[in-house]
Image 1: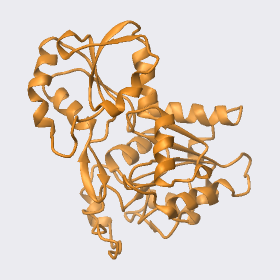
Image 2: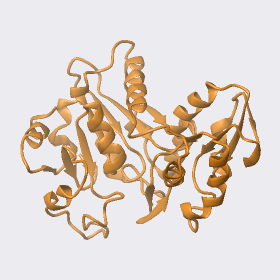
Image 3: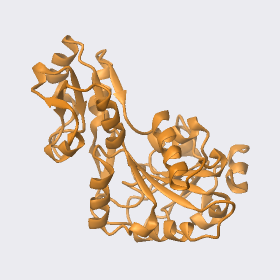
Length: 304
């Protein structure tokens, strides 16, 4: 843990960093969120990509500096990379990508030959490519995989009440392929699969979540880091998790013991008063005092 972040843990104030450079040399690995940190759903945040590139090119301190993008996107990593390319996120900013879609595929593969119902938009269907399953209608399913809302611009979880009740009546387990409740798209909050999973859990449905804030995603990310270097993963004290969501990015990292950094200009931008480009991040302690989890540090946007 960096000296700056360590001081935050022992005091009431959470430091606001001017840039990643304030703490970067203390870490060997960054686990970086994607949506809300590297892009806004339509275009890249240029400063974020540059910051990660500069981190990766810092002199080695016992091991090479690495960046793994950890996303709750409900699709395999290759699809996310294509999206990032389109938004203008440079590939030089990261070493690897781990997604909720990747973890979901592993969970599905544990039940070969199963009848699966896909609850979500067709654009996420690549999550099933090459798997030994049978995609079926809702009433025939042994398991449901939820990747999101069919139309996230108009629908809410309420629109799925009848469908979820049908699954619950037959005790159909659900895999939630994106635990996020919302993401930011062009400064608007868009509902995600996590809202549907939450609604299903509230009526007694069994839900397995693939992604942040749950422990398996951090275990997988550290295993990936070890594989990149052909050895062991870095100590968690030398890993920094960066994200824009308290509920997933910060809570998950904190529970695993990983130092963490909250990006203010993300899904909490309106609450923190930095929704507009000309807004400046002010005092955050009062807002943080009302939250269930506190980050180790805050940064307005990911820059060097």
